[in-house]
Image (cartoon, rainbow, N blue to C red; front, top):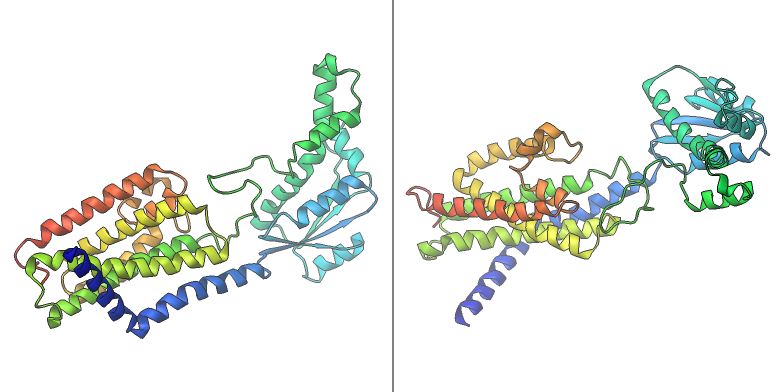
Length: 381
């Protein structure tokens, strides 16, 4: 009981000491504020390409459905609808749009003819571009996805008519009713992860790296905590603490910093809706906290001087951004990713084995820090 009371007193004193530093409080406030601001930018116009859409015959259901599908299906491409094909072409000429997609009269009949093999050259759309570019070429994949549902209906009916004689008496409307129950929404593939609905909003290319960036910030906060403790050690703040308690004191000091910063980061993710459910987030939180603690303790032992840690800090930050799956995930870097704590936080949400590896990582780094700290010249108090 006495040891527990002492632990609570030390926790209170170290926390109170942290909260007296306005820079630390500012950091905790800035993390959710900046993430929310980032989210507001995402809600704005973030398109990198503008496509003008129009139809020669707005009564054509297939053309109208594809226009609606294109309008609601992308953040990278901005689609603008024009009432006439002349207006769409004028938008391209006046540089208001990068290209115009004009659905021709009889779009449904043209698509059905293509599906039945009657024609493979009779186009259903006319494309007008200011100049050909990689972006406009890739944008046509969105058009193919929108057309897939329309062509898919005809292919579906054709296949059943030709290959399933038992369904000879079923009407085309019944076939299509069943087909539409599948709810393809123009997607050939759907992706799902544990704790997230398959129909969730398309991930934004602007906010996608936020979780990884926050993970890097937490690690850097832990290293800053190691520098903070090194400063205290240099001025003799904890000189009266017994030498055999130095490791626990340093670990507790850094754990409080990490827990506060990681907590603020988790609040920011909740406010932006970027969460995967309570238990997956809780597991990743604990494992990441433990891994960051081991990482900062080990580096604090290997680099016992503040100047050395200050020089290493930007190098480590760049290395984590380049190696960890923050912006991109390169397969040949997978082994190097295991050297940094953010990997276990980012991958652990989808691959539970990384949570176990994160616990092993934290244990190994903490044990290494403890053993190295026993070497003369690396004493903590």
